[in-house]
Length: 349
Image (cartoon, rainbow, N blue to C red):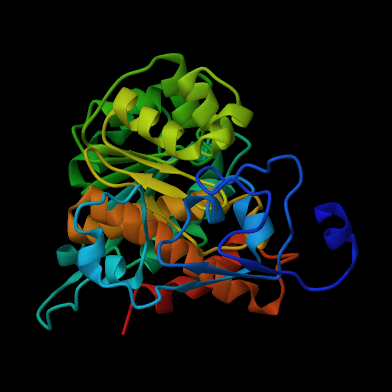
């Protein structure tokens, strides 16, 4: 019957949750209805946001049926949605006497041989997120592409020793975009880990940590499902089958804060209820988008000094900017298109 309904080319309205979709995991139980609209009642269902849920719910409307809040006094939420209030908490109104030094200094380390653009994208994202100063440290071969953006300061890092002065000035370090896994990249990572600075860790820096695991209370790890699988020694399919469990395990194993990227990105902080992002769109599945997220989180962390707040606000801002950029269409969306929308998203009304 569900197969016939899906094949009928008529809009399907789902009541509470699409038939055939697991309400907790978002797994498809054989066949599930592909709804154009889902109206869910009283409590939001995790399955609408996890796994295959976003593919099947269509437009999601929540109706609380006026159930009084005290009804939930003795229940514990399995997750909470990210909201605009998370951005406001991390980025309050600026004082009139503030200056560039008041808003933090982000150091982006990446841009290894043959990968010049990723570090620049992260640096520009940190600027658009509001960081007062941004320095990008790249392999000497790539210094020109960073210098082409006049607001970015740049450092040619021939070896880890060349990072010392930049690390001393940094408020937050973002490492990984275009880093590579060669001797150069490994040296840059070890220098960043030894700096004592708060870190936002992405891309090849995550792959290197998967090879040699360690823990920290002072970093945000931002893996996509493939990187998460390498960190956990499992498969991408297993991560996707239990995204909440994977985020919890990543945080428990590596410490700090975890952003598990993908449809319904999850933010997991120690001892906290996981946060799910219901913004974003398929057009954001393109190269460079993770580099922009890394820069956004680092830029917000440089301003607020709180990695948990920065992870939540950064994920929301990044997804919101992606939705604004997609108004002209999802197909063909570029990471730099999202950069252009960040400014409005980090200045909430």
